[in-house]
Length: 303
Picture 1 (cartoon, rainbow, N blue to C red):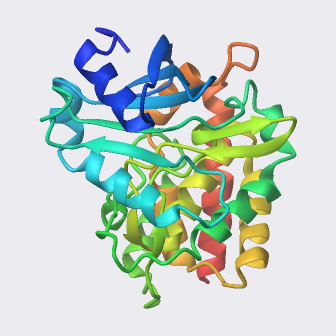
Picture 2: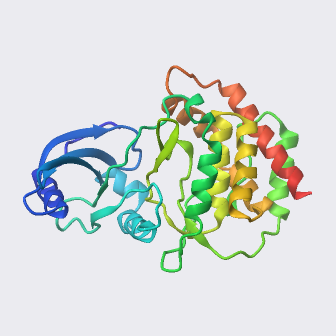
Picture 3: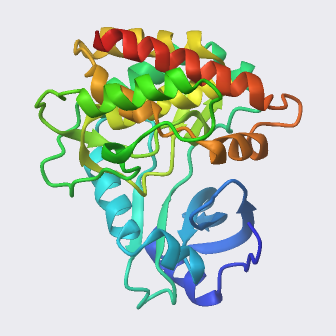
């Protein structure tokens, strides 16, 4: 992310006060990968020990492009998730008005682990991902604002596939699908492999809850399946669906799932190239083919 500026003294003092009496930030490390906000790891000394917290802050175009309300949305999501034994950050403080920090900001605990360094690092974790998502979807969401962050009701296949027959079939299937009426669940909103942390092959954290809210479980299921198809292939996306339905005891609505998969587009190819480690370069042609295979399977389930 270009134009990075380290957190101001005002923000650091706010963070210290949120952590506790006599807390002191001793080190600031920029975190990479944040697309909607600047991310920093703050090393803090308090109570005779040193530990890390994570600061997310929005400024300028980031705030205008992604819209107000993200701080409150993430704060509410993390509060709802607290005390459920899930590998998610704990909210420490939030300032959506920027009155205390100068920019909208949120402070949370740091989780152990690292993003997957290559697609093979998460290949063995598909069942873990499905299990964690099934548990997230059991957390009460009645007090959360509705979320549908990716415009699932307007999805069509557009431009990225040379298979015009598939594009036509997918678009017609989405238009004709009658989604079942299901109670809303707590939705992450951007539940995909790049927002997961791993430690010793175990899923140690799910981060980036800025799109959290109340919505359809397929919002998370479909987007995660899409991410797995891009990184690992169609079999991983299908395995995830089977494991999720097994762990949750609920059949995923095939029409809503298809809408989730149709989030794919030309921008995903460039995004994947930037995010996947150079040791595992993305082949644009094969990636599109992997997504096509998952979409075909989803259309079949509608029949």
